[in-house]
Image (cartoon, rainbow, N blue to C red; front, side, top):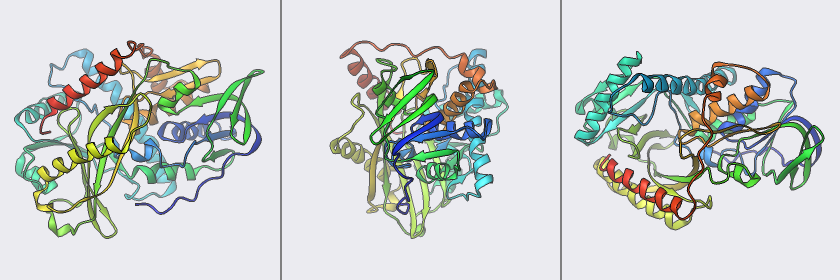
Length: 423
């Protein structure tokens, strides 16, 4: 829905840098931003294989979430409370970067909107889950508000939701516009190059030589911020699960056809349920529906998989918004994320002078942003609360051999989607 991007140039020739950041998504751009804050004189080269905003970051659903996402109705033990506080510290560090940029660059709510989010239920199980989550948030001292079915309908315009829980700290972004705006905020000596894949890198003296299709960059340090594609450089072999999630976006419709607020964003009460957003555009409103996950070890999906997910989205949309009958979908897409078996980031110094900020395990806008910040801090020797948290993470566990991983991943996702049911 954005105008065509005015791209940064491709990299050509030879250059010397203090840092090369590979990948211009949430992690890479956040790393570059943090490096420039730590030392404004650092020469930073950001290499993006495609066009900024057209990769997985731009296909995100736009939630920079500040609270634990996959809530549990189990007892809230001391260990889980500590982990939740740790998660909150990670997520809010990511949000703070966005607030800094929004104030500095003068972004409006069309790019960065600190409007909060709803977590919505459509079943008794979902209602119980939200009630338990409310108790956990009380224990953490976090502001929130429970809504009954009527109050939820006042927000969403849908009478099919049975309850909701609102938390005010989440920021909603237009993800492609957001990453574009970060990339365009940089000034020398930070340089972003698009359509410039890093083909390889090799040791050169005390540093590294990074090869691109039309040039070479000699650098002291590298930050790998290309998520699952880090495996293309030989790192995290048999440690990353490549999972795609899918979304559809309706055509514009007359806002008078649907009651409720004209702008809101909701995640599901149960894990792997359905995320929904109502979006305002120039000619009317749209509904975004995100659901369905698939394991794709080849880091690619075909039209058939997108179409299959789209058919599910159509059913989810029809069930929630009968007032919008005959409003079809205009766009459908899939986006990749990388998971680890033990749900820790693929992070840290993987070789001398090479730092990884990968494997975000979902919640890419929050976790990948924080990983990029932490990688920049560790690479420059800056100690913060964030680096102390990341230092405590275990390394990613090695996955079982194929086809055990393939079968296990597919079965696990199918079971969790089944458990989510009507959510």
